[in-house]
Amino acid sequence: MAGKNRPFHSRESETPTRRRFLEAAGIVAAGAALANPSKSSAAPKGRYGHNLNPRPNCLAITSETNKRVIVCDDTGSTYVSTTSGANNTRFASPHSGKASFVAVSKQSDPAQVFVLTAGFDGHVFVYKLSDPSTRIRDFDHHLNAGGSGTQVWTVAVTDDGTHAISGTNGGEIRIWNPNDPNGASVAVSATDEPVTALAFVPQADGSYVFLAGYGDGKMESWSYADGALTRDGELYDHQTALPVNSIAVYKAHPNDANALAVSGSFDSNIRIWNVGKGQGGGQKPKIFKSHNHFIWRVAISSDGKTIAAVGEDGQVVFVDANANETGARKTKAHGIMGVEFLNDNNGGLLITKGQLDPFNASASFEQIKVT
Image 1: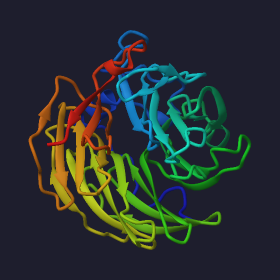
Image 2: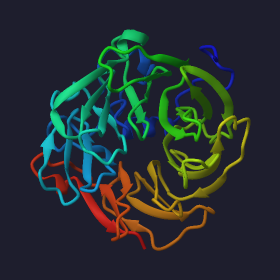
Image 3: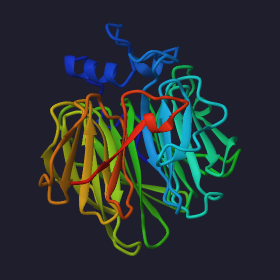
Image 4: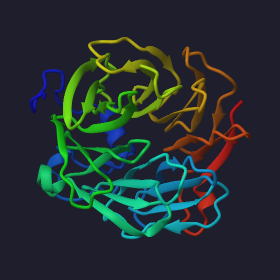
């Protein structure tokens, strides 16, 4: 296991670009002094206000037959609805700070699907899709990292819901069981850089590879089996000291050795990787510059052929796995914080809108065609 201060992680001094990222992400208020976020004593306010006009920060779609859309916002709340916005329900016990990320497992039975929400209050809350009124686990990163300024920036869950992984602004990553209210966690690493993106890659032998992206533009790969961790190595970095903000993974068949992974960064570039167990050590990706501003999220279609990237410039950009742009760009009047393929016969894509309406879920996201 790597030590706390790995050589390739070092906190960069403040730059105008880094400040724009921190303000856009709601990590510091516009014009505020930039302090080490892991030492902060209060949850950040963000630039989008509190209960007035909350901004949807994250988006997830379940894979069960009657698809559900999960949206979280910068007031700490998370909502579930149909893809048309009907039956909008808020999950119980919202975060006391901004809800930063949401992840869902992929079972077909709603009673088995886990919904995990990460928050700037340092917690990850776990629910079952079938019962938004009951929180079944509160995973508290304060118990491990200490300090009132701990914020959870990202979380991922395996397709079968047996493992979750979460990362903080203070550089801590932990693996744990979403279904065990008091279960122990496994410490992956601790770095000086915020953990900004995480993704699982299931392996045919029942083990996992997971990918981690950091606030300094670095990425690395780990193998995890039976509670044992092996660091496979650093992937070729984004080279800009700006965060890797999103990682999406596609695997054509469970027995395939490798998977397609896509990362999106605040350097405005998409990177396309071929990842597998034991791989790392400077692999060079295909690179495509997709946006004129920060990339917030990336997603991959169910056939692995189309990548969608959305960003602060309001553009939805479609790219194929060979890093060639496909179809027309779609431009909206707002920055887009979330994107997911519907993976249905209509070939649709869901994106978040600029503001969230707690009383009308369909006002929080928009369905567009992939062309």
